[in-house]
Image 1 (cartoon, rainbow, N blue to C red):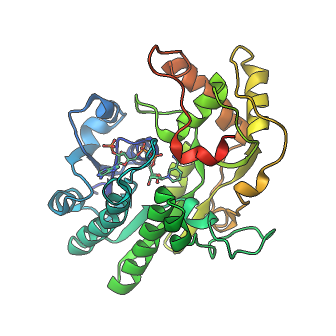
Image 2 (spheres, helix red, strand yellow):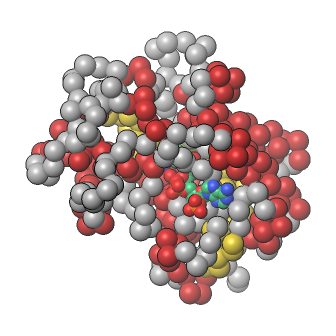
Length: 337
Ligand SMILES: NC(=O)c1ccc[n+]([C@@H]2O[C@H](COP(=O)([O-])OP(=O)(O)OC[C@H]3O[C@@H](n4cnc5c(N)ncnc54)[C@H](OP(=O)(O)O)[C@@H]3O)[C@@H](O)[C@H]2O)c1
């Protein structure tokens, strides 16, 4: 019997690379879209076990509808992972974030409808959950909580606005057009990288380990392992009963406790200055019970954190590079003093 064939958009990115690896290991034939198949930053995909027989790379920008149609053609399922995760302050929000996220998602869904794709899993974010000023204080957020897109746009939180509008658009499109669309909302993703270049969220933890230079607030982070995100995406794809959105955010820990845990095992780094004063409310607690009840079993946080620092060390991300000062990505400006 032929292997089931699926497409992963943005295949060379942090989350998508782990998903491609998982799909290949489970016997899927994979179409991965990348913007430039010849770019060395995507070379790790071709080296994955099973890639020579079962992985095809397609050149596609999310705004290129013809390229997307070619990539999803022949696939029974699509994992839409690609979306900008900007590290720097966004100067042209429409072109750099909103359009690739929202129009890009619509383009992928339309390509899926036109090519008889059976099920689409869209990667959203807890960014599309948290920022809701009317959610009652002290109540744990679940899938019924949506970030307020008007509030996010007004506050110029472009990534958050883009993820919220893209996820809402995807679910609405699915309902109106009879396409099975399920969304997954991971919190901050950590764990080892498969690709050679560091992604935006991992940069935050390199900043914590290398010691700033600026002090950070003691906010509480919701953290999920990148390997558990890949598992969650495949689980919601394979379970016939999955529907709607799934929060994927199993663990909570403060900046202060992260630095202390790292310091215990790796005492030779500077670590960021951070008071033990609590800023817990800046990242509200969420529940992943809906995903767990589908059978998702995330690993322990300590394993994720220690595997991350071990990988950063091996990959050279913790070395000082002249002319490249350590930076806290602008997306996480709220975490700094
Ligand atoms: N990392 C996290 O903590 C986290 C948490 C929650 C949700 N997410 C979501 O997870 C997904 C993957 O994020 P990630 O952390 O893996 O980041 P990443 O490594 O930066 O991956 C993003 C991917 O999107 C692609 N992309 C961006 N704009 C594109 C466009 N216009 N056309 C085609 N491809 C485009 C990038 O391609 P290039 O390499 O060509 O730029 C890259 O492959 C995103 O949807 C993100 O919002 C991430």
